[in-house]
Image (cartoon, rainbow, N blue to C red; front, side, top):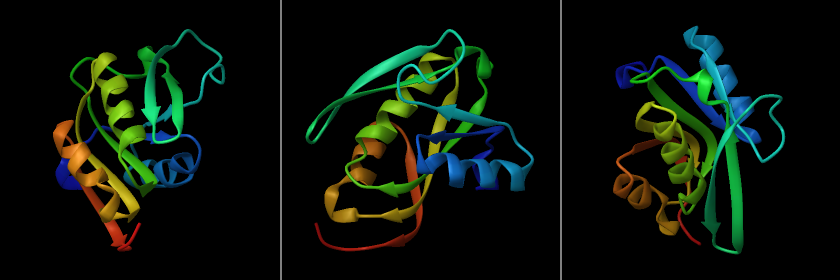
Length: 132
């Protein structure tokens, strides 16, 4: 994690808050919540993205990121990579440099690591579980 050069940690709603906030606290870095629509008490920017069963939207406070700030994403599970790619795109729209994402669990057969690589993000996980 430290090798990523991150100066902030972003976590995606909802379990990403638990893991991301813990990592941010341990590393003494700011935590950036990426939330479902209408949850933040400020002006936000957002991104709509496709899920395997429909669509969703994520939002964030663009003032929480400095232009050029290196941000690592943290979440519990990497499946298809749709939410993580959307989060990377949203953070980049706000000015962040996003090159790394860290997960507790990867389901490699669902292709999330490849999708993130296509989005310019290197994914790492603590454990993997094969199978759909």
